[in-house]
Length: 86
Image (cartoon, rainbow, N blue to C red; front, side):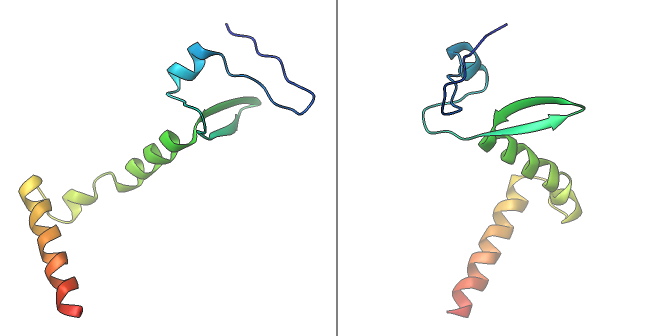
């Protein structure tokens, strides 16, 4: 268990062990989440990345992509289309 003290400005220092576990560095943002009456915080960038991963889960399969070559072919096609528009 770690303890932190809140300053008169509402600031607190996140203990180094917690920063390491959350992969937080100077300037990183955190998000506060309420869940069933408990408040916790997470690394905002990692939370956003995980949400994006969840949102795209299965999209490659639905688009008919089975491997990296299929993805690269799609990227090449998109680049060709973009160049054709210019």
